[in-house]
Length: 84
Image 1 (cartoon, rainbow, N blue to C red):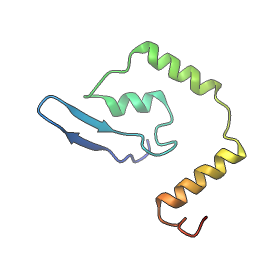
Image 2: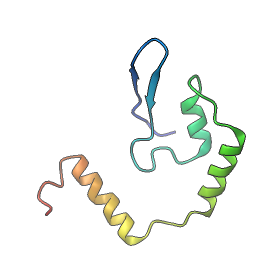
Image 3: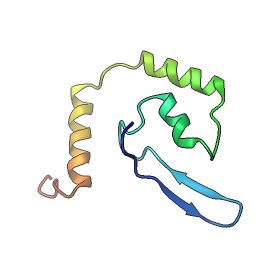
């Protein structure tokens, strides 16, 4: 399992926001999502099945998508400041 940055923001005694999977490909399988959400929420079986089906039917990234992903990654690390 990938190392995932998790941030909990407590708004009050009853509501907690959990932020996971904030980077592309950080959570690549439904089972990883279920593990990360354990203790906070359950993912209904129907949702798990739909996510698994969607994943199995997805195609590889196009060249443009790969280039955009690389560009966003550069900018997010501060390495892309010279791009216009």
